[in-house]
Amino acid sequence: MTRWLKKLQLLYNGQSKIVRSIMEIQIKIFITGHSAGGHLAALAVMNPKYGIDPTEVSGIILNDAAGLDMKNYLENYPPANDNDYIATWTTNPDVWRDASPIYFLDKSTPPFLIYVGDKTYESIKTSNNRFFMISTFYITSFDLKSVMNYR
Image (cartoon, rainbow, N blue to C red; front, side, top):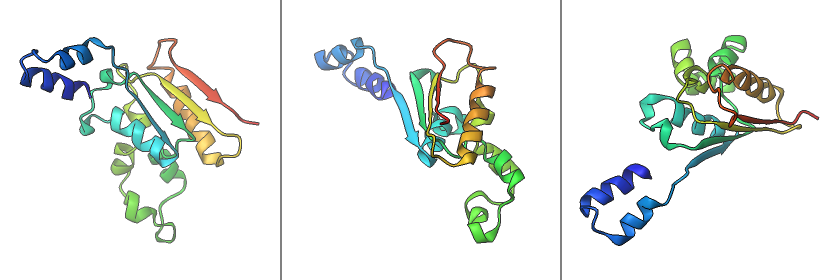
């Protein structure tokens, strides 16, 4: 969004009152997703190959996010044809790592709000907890929040 607005401003040489007004508003963009959508939301912002500048994202909201560390999951539960994981994830651990947001945590990672339901899969609870614990090494601001609800 911010890149689009900057292009628009250049296109109109900063002359459009509407563009100037929009640029003056502080834009906050939050990315969110549930389950596999949480995985994709985090991955799109965190993995540089997708071209999103993490400084333009105010935060990432995960709701029962799956797949935050597919490398770890697939090392413990190897992919097989019967669960269709080979078609999706291949048998290559480098692909698993590249598709796992946990390996892209760094100082530029936006803050997270993490929701984990009490009736979700145990693997989702475990991976979200692991993701949260590892993220605390990289995200040092107090904006990091976690709502871990294990009833």
